[in-house]
Image (tube, rainbow, N blue to C red; front, side, top):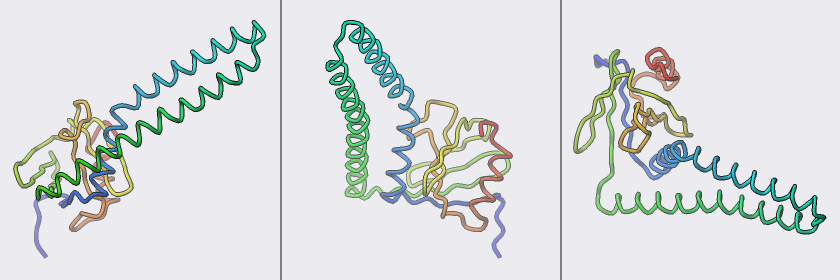
Length: 179
């Protein structure tokens, strides 16, 4: 049995699924407050206008406004998701066509996370991790900066070499204060 000085070793290959899940989750976490604020302001606008119109006896106009409100609400969320999905897939396909399949090797020891990939390395200490996001196939460790793609470690749940994913999560909960 090979001895490893690291608590956990993980190899994450950015397949289309992992790439798509991680970018979508990071982007949503980054922009969800903005989307919620816009939709909340729009909801308040519709409610105030409905109250004003009810006082003036415009019941049919209120029904029409509520229908328009529902349609816009659905379109805003749908548009955001569809455009973002298209952009992610296009970016991934360009990456694959140029031969840039990215594979990360992560080493988790008692003090820090060390990531190695084809063109570089990075080290992050556990106290720099500000959030953990979960997707179906990954765990995303965001640093204490705004979560952007280049400031996150995307760890494949099935990429652990010796210990299990559940052991890894227990280990992280003991190391990361933000969780």
